[in-house]
Image 1 (cartoon, rainbow, N blue to C red):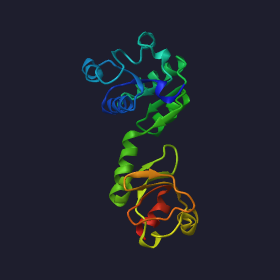
Image 2 (image 1 turned 45 degrees about the vertical axis):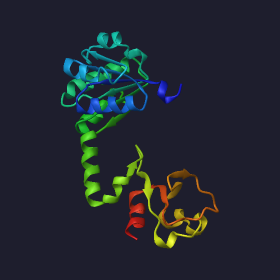
Image 3 (image 1 turned 135 degrees about the vertical axis):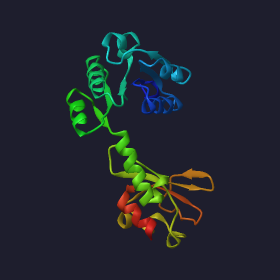
Image 4 (image 1 turned 135 degrees about the horizontal axis):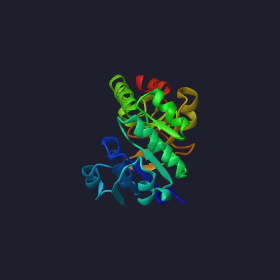
Length: 219
């Protein structure tokens, strides 16, 4: 089964849950959206495959909406920590293979991990950190962090001294501890070879740690 065939259950349709549903739907994923709020469910009805008004802390209700068919469960509940923990426990009891849960703080995160969450996320904290980094390092607006790692990927322009040289001559790995993944040249992206010569108008798609990429930008 490829990723697009996997069924994702989103429990909790606040701003975070709705954002998840919209993005997953845009990417062609099959989504079951569940919340006790009729308003939230109606807002998602035309976006996801199935939007159902139900109590996400009620095991029988989740079974009825097809929770056991889900490959991934996301507990997107916001302020109600008790409901978040209970919903996570239920999704694991229903044997959903991979459960992601939203945490409010580190204590909440530890409890979620103990009841079986495969991954715990802190959307508010991560968003705050991302905003702070963008304020300090504006260039990072063109980069995305690889989940669960210190690596960032994105496009960056070549420095003047890079123009006219090949990748082996530039030796990005030794100089910046970065890997060149592809090059965007006049709207066409390609994987460069050893004989590819960098042009001034190129956009180089690279992967590396923030501190190393920052050296490139600051030069």
